[in-house]
Image 1 (cartoon, rainbow, N blue to C red):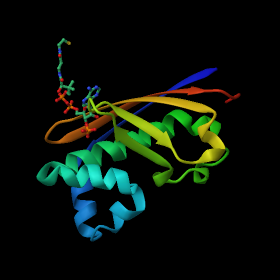
Image 2 (image 1 turned 90 degrees about the vertical axis):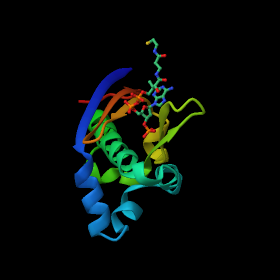
Image 3 (image 1 turned 30 degrees about the vertical axis):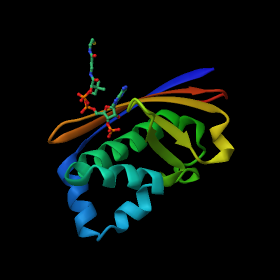
Length: 128
Ligand SMILES: CC(C)(COP(=O)(O)OP(=O)(O)OC[C@H]1O[C@@H](n2cnc3c(N)ncnc32)[C@H](O)[C@@H]1OP(=O)(O)O)[C@@H](O)C(=O)NCCC(=O)NCCS
């Protein structure tokens, strides 16, 4: 069992601008339907939730990159960040080729300007 960490921080205004500039194309490329449903339900606060999920996906990628032969093996939408009934976030890896070899724990936080994500990945295979 190998343990890897990943972290990411992002300016919420950057994600807001990208979403607005791309007329939602960015949302369709990055987020799953369930993630979109969650973020849109947050109405005017939605950019914080989109931003922290973007940071979360980057943090997951950083944690698991050593198990990927090349970064194109995983797509943004293969990493899905949802919340349990208490609000605690969790990660679904939707790519079956690697999902049975990793367990991921994630923690998210956001304020007015920044969103941050931390990830711990438990990887059941040899990694560099
Ligand atoms: C859950 C709680 C910790 C969230 O704190 P917060 O400062 O409001 O939240 P932040 O803005 O930093 O982060 C929000 C993220 O927290 C995460 N979160 C929400 N509820 C959570 C929970 N129960 N467990 C873990 N993470 C949680 C979510 O990912 C959320 O982002 P999302 O909605 O986009 O997914 C807070 O509302 C709470 O209940 N605090 C009580 C603490 C307490 O009881 N302390 C006593 C002794 S320590």
